[in-house]
Amino acid sequence: MKNVLSITEARKKLPGIIKSLKTSPDTVYQITVHDEVVAEIKTPARISPGEASAKLLAMRKKLKPKRRGYRLPISENIKEHLYVAEKRD
Image (cartoon, rainbow, N blue to C red):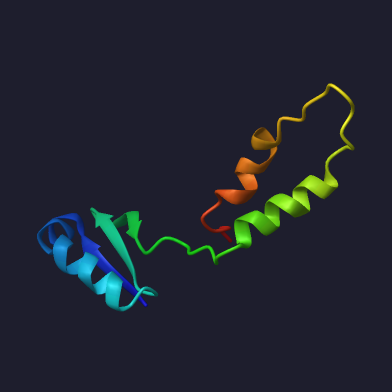
């Protein structure tokens, strides 16, 4: 459910908005300035337990085989996959 608020209303109701996000995490608040949406307040995407490690193992299998004396920079290759909150349409 989307709620549209002006920036002034959002400032006044911010504690209530945060509390309502705890009770109904599917709610999205759109903040407007001069009738133009400039921001959204919503709950962050949740990662299920073990999902990050499963992605790491799958990516490790796709990388080149380990050569003696050569270390692959795994952390440089996985950040974009592990820390993406949501894909936007």
